[in-house]
Amino acid sequence: MTDNPSDNRAQDGRQVATLAGGCFWCLEAVYPELAGVHSVKSGYAGGHKANPTYQEVCSGSTGHTEVVQVEFDPAVITYRDLLDVFFSVHDPTTKDRQGNDVGTQYRSAIFAHDDEQMRTAREAIADLEAADVYSGKVVTEVTKAATFYPAEAYHDNYYARNPEQGYCQVIIAPKVAKFRKQHLGRLRRSDAATAAGLPG
Image (cartoon, rainbow, N blue to C red; front, side, top):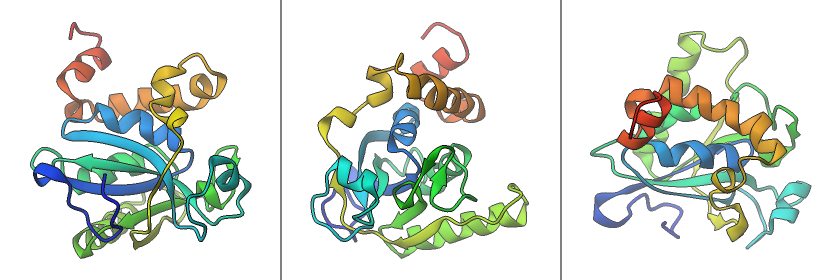
């Protein structure tokens, strides 16, 4: 992952996307299944305190939102593809909340790493509104990338490691199932086979 907020370049021609759509466990559960995605890391961005802890972010006192930073190969999956998934797995019309998760730390936001990402994000939102995909107005913030602070290690692969946990079963599992159905053609071959009930 890149430490430079304005740098969307990673190794081997890969790029970086930083997205916030409520609890980062939800986004972190879906992006690794996409072909062309090399890594996904949960973290915090958009606040005013250096190196915030999960507890501090959850209190709403630091101004950060929970994000995932996605490293991807643009030759396999485009930034717009990532945004299409992003808008399909959370509600971008509810300000500072996703379901029962309420607070600025759960706001919908896109942190653009360059002018091209900024333009693409704004176009994606305009397309959603023009198509009346949602009954409400899209309130997703689109801003320049802020410093990304990696979350504590216990958040890594949270859904995969804790599938029986209550939040995972009630909130994340239905989102993952919906994501797999809507984006079957974008999944890695093994994940696509699993989603379709076929041998990998």
